[in-house]
Amino acid sequence: MIGAGVGSIPAATPLAPLLEDLQRQQKAVRLKPEALERALTLDLRSESGLMRSTLLHRLNALDVPWGRLTDAGRSRGTFRENWQLRWEPEFAVQLVEKLIYGSTIAEAAGGRLMEAMRSAAELGALATQVRNAMIADLPRATEFGIAALEEKAALTSDCQALLAALPPMADILRYGEARAGTVEHLASLMPRIVVQAALALPYAARNLDAAAAGKLRSAILAADSAIQLAQLEADVVTGWRDALQALLRDNQATRLVAGTAARLLYEVELLTAEQASDLLSRMLSPGTPVAEAAGFFEGFFEGAGQRLIHDAPLRGAVDSWLLGLEPEAFIASLPLFRRVFSALDRSERRRLMDALFARSGSAKGYRLIPGAAALWPEHELVRQIRCEQGKMEVVVDFSPRLDYGRVAPKIGDAGKFGWRIDTGANVFILRGNIALEPTPDGLAARFVLRSGESVVFTFSFSAEAPAVVPPLGSAINEKLNLANRKVRFNFARLC
Image (cartoon, rainbow, N blue to C red; front, side, top):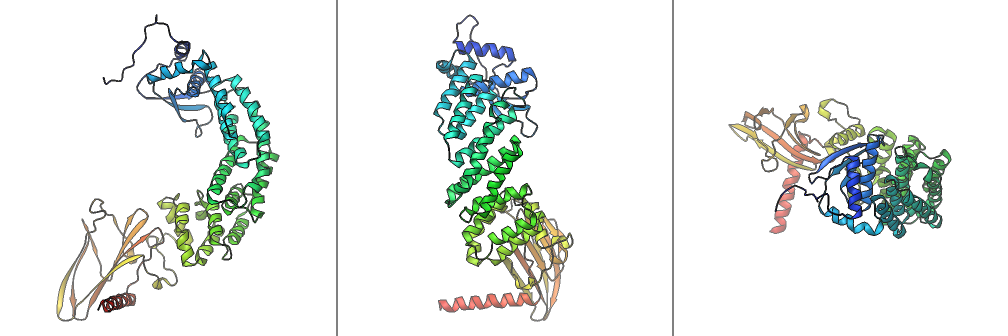
């Protein structure tokens, strides 16, 4: 049987206590269970909005996901919640199964969370359960969780576990603005955990393998955001940032973690541009092992590559390091570079290239650089037509078919630098020593060659990097001669 209707139980039929309580609360908050999914936005400053939110959070604590929280209001303040509601018939059965925790929604949700708190092995998981109890307005479970948090925090020396507890605690303090009576519980506990984590961080960051360093880096970034969100006392924040400074002075600190610490200090202006440039120059110097330099580079720039667009000293330090890499080391680091710069979109990558080569808006974004004639494009086709005697009429038709004809190319005039076709991060460039005219399908030309005259075309492709515009003139003959020598050599090897 197929349908979207939800049946109902006659009013005179006895129900399980949890189902009766749920029906009473649904009527009180004016929420009707429906099988069709619908959006619901709640303002926690109103009594009705807070009551609806509390009911939905308590049901989630009972593993009855009538509502799914899609946005806790991070972009619109702490007083707004966005939910997606959809009632499933099996939710009634799941709710009856939770009778072992209590006969009302509040009692059962509190009992279910307290059980989860007792079994929580990590401090971060325990803090998340305390947050769930607070936003579901369950005082008994909240008090139990706070006591468990204090006890576990006092017995925990693991830096990563301490750091993992900070984001949910910051969320609790943030929710305290909209839910009365929650802030004071953690007003003293969170600063103590920050101090403990700051003391343990320099030792926890030493000599880690790649997997452990990545986990610690993620924990540090999340913890730093939580500390800023919670707006703790100045001396607590200073202690945390002193721990980040200590990572920069510790030669045993894993470079990925040290780079992350340097980035966080730079963002809050505790490292000036000159200091950051000096630090990068030292960490990325030729004497530094490539793996360590790449780790520091990733820690500093992953997720923050836009800084290179606007910060000339940082850009210069990175540019000098890249130019100093041996070819093998550069190729080995290419996946890292792609990962770091993948967060930049096409326009940002172009702006970075413009800043790197000091390009202005002239000449369609191209600029001649010293030694350009010695550079070859990533891929290039060269075609030369020569008239040996008499005269001949030549017709040129350029009709590109990108992606097997599925993509209509957009051909732009780049002036003296030829014609270009942009396809995302890639670019095709067509140049020649005769004029081409646009047509509905591409470009075309018709001309006459006489004895001794010739015409040349180059069609090149570049990806991700600054495009090399192939020069014409004598460089073409050099490329053709080199190609001929390679063909003859390969043919001679086969004979």
